[in-house]
Image 1: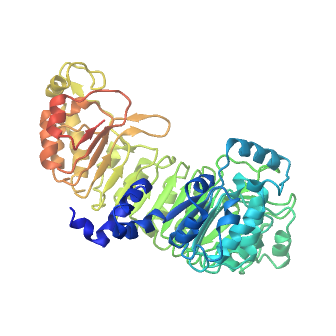
Image 2: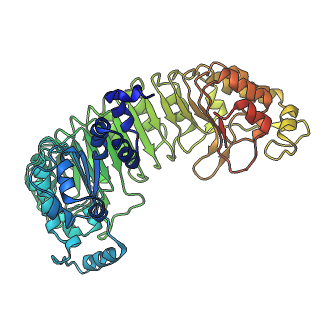
Image 3: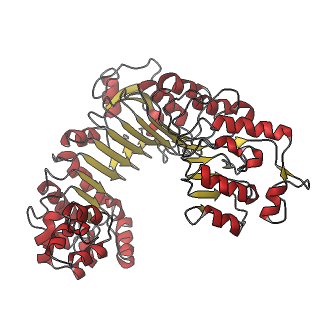
Amino acid sequence: MEATFKIPELRSQIAQNLTKSDLKICMLVCQGWAQDFRPYLWHKVVLNQQLAYTMTKDLFQKYAYLIRTLVISDPMPLLNDWFLPRVCSNLVEISIEPRLSPKRRLVSAMYRSSRHTDQSIDFMSLASVDKIFDLIIDCSPTLQKVEEQWFTLSQAHTNLFAEWLCRQRTGLSEISTCHWKLSSFDQLYSLLEMNSRLRTLSLLHISIDLTNSNDNNNNSADGGNGKGGGGGGDGGGNSEMTLDFGKLWNLSLSAVKLKEPEGSVPLKIQVQARELVSLTFTGLQDTFPSPSNPLSLARKISSWYCPNLKELNLTHDDNDANHSVMMLFASANRLETLSITDSIIHPTEAIQLLLQRHANTLKSIDLSGTIGLASSDLQSILTSCPNLIDFTGSGDKLWYTRLIQQPWVCRQLQSLVIFIHLPLKVTLQNGNHDSEAGGSIHTRNNEMKYTKEQLEMYKGVYDQLAPLTQLKSIRLGGFCRGGKHFIGIPWNLAAGLDRLRGLSKIESIYFTGNLSEIGTEEAWWFKKHWPRLKTIQRINSYIEVLDTQISDILGPGVRVY
C-alpha cells in the first residue's frame, strides 16, 4: 500500500473521491502529497461569509488559479476585496446562488415588495451584478459555464444580469438562467448573438410579455415572416414567426410563459433548431389562458424542425404533451433517448409514429407517470425496438393476454419496469390468498401450490423474460398512477422461476408479493444462478421479516427490504 501511494497518478485518482477534510489531512503528509492533493481541494470553492473566517485574502489570491468552479453564495463584500484582475485565471464555471441569512432574507423580501433596492445594503447592492459580470469577462476564454439564480435577491438583479448577457460578448458555451422577464423575442436573439459559442441553454420560468412589443405587428406586416424567415400566414387569421435557436446543441425550456396583447392576431411559432441534439421541454400543468395567466409557450408552437434530435424529455405537460410529441417525433430523424413523464398523451397514434420513425434507434424509454397509453402500445414498443436498453412503462398496465401474443425483440434490455396485470392470485394449500396467509415463511413456502391455469400464465411471462439475458434490474409490479396495486409474478421455483436461470446478470429485483415467495430453495437458487444479485426490494408497504436462515444463505452482500 505504501508503494502504491508513491505513484502521483494514483494519488490523483484517489483524490477525486475524497472530502475536503480528507484532502486537508492528506496534504499534511509531505510536500509531494500536498502538491498532488491541493488542486482537488481548490477545485470548487464556495464564496460566502464563512470563507472569510476560515481563509485569508492573501491565501485565496495565492491559490485562486487552481479554482475551476466558483459558487458565489454571498455576492458582497468579498467580490470587492478579494478579486484582482486574472486572479482566477483557470476558472471554468461560475454558479451564482445567493443565500441569505434569515434576517437578510426578511429585509430582501421587504425591499422586493417595495420595488426598491438600496445601494447601502451590501448584500442587496446591484453593484454585485456588475462585479460578477466583470469577473466573467476577466476569466474569458477559460470560463465556459454560468448558472444564475439572482431572483432569490430581487427581480432587479435578474433583469440587470439579463441585460448584461444580451449586450456583452462572451465566450460562454453553457448558460442556465431562471425567472427572466422578456419583452420581446429580440432579447433572446441578442443572447444567442452575443454568446456565439453558446451550445447549451437552460431557460427556467421565463415569461415573454408581448403586450408592449412590436413582434406581432412586425410579423403581420412582413407577411407572417419572423426572424430567420418562415412561411406566411396560415390562412386562418394566425400570425406566424420563426424562432431560430441557431447552433445550440442542448436546450431546456421549462415553464416558459407567453403573453400576447388582447385582441391581437394569434401568434404561431415555427421553431428551427437544426443542430439541436437534446431537448427538455416542460409545459405549464393545468394552466388555462387568461389576462393574468399567460399561455404556455408549448401551445403556440405550430412546428418543430430539429432533424438531429437524439434526446427528448417532456415533463408535467398534461395539456401540451401530445401536441408537442407528434411534431417532435415527426421532425427528428433518430431519437435514442425518450422521456415523457407525468403527462397525458393520446394512445396508439403517438406510439405508431414513434415506432415508424425511431424503432431501430431508440435505446432508452421512460414513460413513468404518463397515462393514456393502451396495453397494446406498451407491447408494441417491446416487440419493435431491438436496441432498447432501458424501458420504464407508463402508469397504465400491460395485460397478460397482450404480453404473450408476440415475443419481445429487445434482447439488449438491462432495466425493465412495467405493471403486468395478472388476474389470478396465488393459492396456498389451506386455501388462503398469499397476501393474507399466516404461519412462518418456511411453512408457507413449502405449502404453496398453483393451479394448472396459474402455471400456464406464469410460464408465459417467464418465457417472455428468459431471452433477455442482459437484464440487470427488473420490476413487474407495484403501484401505478391512481394507486392501483399490481402483484406481478411470484419469485419462487414452484411457479417456474427456474426458466430464468439464464439471467445471470440480474442485480436487483422488485416485487409486490410476500416474502413467503422466497424460501431456502430459492435462496440457494439465487446464489447459484444469479451471483450478481444485490437487492431484493418489496414495493408494497406490508412489513415482513425475512427468515434468518434465508438471510444467511444469501449472505451480507444481498439486501432484502
